[in-house]
Amino acid sequence: MQAIAGQVARADNSGRMIANTIMAGAWTFLEEQSMLVLGSWNGQRDVCASLMVGQPGFARTVDGSQVIIDTAESLVGLDDPLWENAKNNGRVSLLAIELTTRRRLRINGQVVALPNGANERSRLEIKVEQAYPNCPKYIQRRVLRAGTLVPSTLASQLFTQLSDEHVQLISNADTFFVASVHSSAGTDVSHRGGKPGFVNVVSSRQLRIPDYVGNSMFNTLGNIHASGIAGLLFIDFTGWRQLQIIGDARIDWASQTPSAQRYWNVDVRQVRESWLPEGLTWTYVDASPFNPFL
Image (cartoon, rainbow, N blue to C red; front, side, top):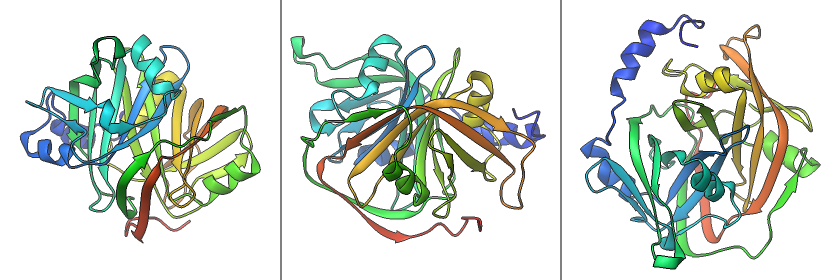
């Protein structure tokens, strides 16, 4: 992907920040977070991005070689694909993102411990294989407040295409998260942002997304180029819903605009709509100064 885009030299320079442990300076950052996004893969054609929230301290590292998540102190739906994927495949990724400060930390690795009620173990432990910070571009600032979190009693629903309400949510979105996978290298999960409307809903079964200038490592698009699949997460920051979209993805090399180097398309195969926990709120602060004009 880097070679096709003519960005090998720049990618090599950016790639030097990738390590097999979490840098000591990021340990406190991880422990301060109330929000994580996790990427998981079922080993076949489904890769999924999942939101996990909790009080600061629910995720931590002891020595930088692992991430320990206290699942008794965090919330993600019991029927979320994350759990089955982690059990059956074990290749997961994690994005710790602080929207208020636009700081983020990406971690990819292997599950070594899962929650198990039989022996009262309530932790998800991930062995770190790759860890690195990311630039603050295209992140809209929001203040996250996690009060007393209560799981929603509303059941999740599955769809094979986008409803009119889903289309409206995506069309108004300025932020989403994307999980991707390489069959031998594992999963990755990242952030995407832009002005509301930057994700184009082509139809109830297809999305079209611009690729803005980044660090040239192409972690996400490289995986899409190799696997042909992606998992998207859209959060309704004011309506307490979330959409997890699983689909087939492909890069459109021919399309280019002054703001987008290329585009990528997602053909929707499944949409999972669920409700965020009660007690979770975001307050919008401002848009990224880097957001290109549409």
